Image 1 (cartoon, rainbow, N blue to C red):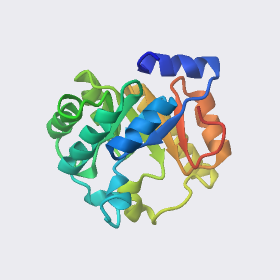
Image 2 (tube, one colour):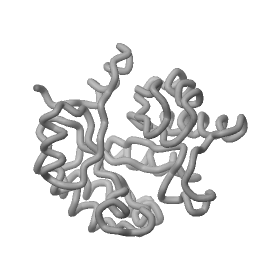
Image 3 (cartoon, one colour):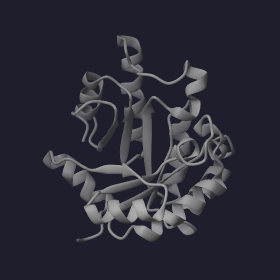
Image 4 (cartoon, rainbow, N blue to C red):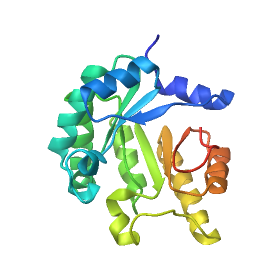
Length: 211
């Protein structure tokens, strides 16, 4: 099978074909997912809680992300590989963010990076994209900042907050993201975002209408 490309994923959306996305933290799982035909594999900073035992994802370091991304890369042949930018990186200057995004590509062999929504993140996305690194966005429940937002749980439960999440997804598309993760938003909201965006939506607990 040919290597999966961003253009291929976006063409799948245009044709109404579903995209399979899963997370891997190590070589054996990455190899199994790749051989099973998963289209995109994310090395999520959720590894901090799932693998390393942290209470939140906010404590995950760039060094830890690179360690696991390298292991996953060794198991992936055909899927698009995306590394999750840790909060440690996103708290830094834009030059630091670009440097760390480049490390995901050059050191770990990732094809793209993912960033979670926060105020001003669209500017960050633009500088990463300008450095020729593809970016996936993430709206709804954003685990890196969940503690400041009342903890884990469904987002966009009323009209005002739903409108904010829809707007955030549109901002990220305009900034150059090639896809958007929708985490823990009601299915009707995810359906509307998916309808409005020309780029793929990847659902995490957001109903069946995501791409």
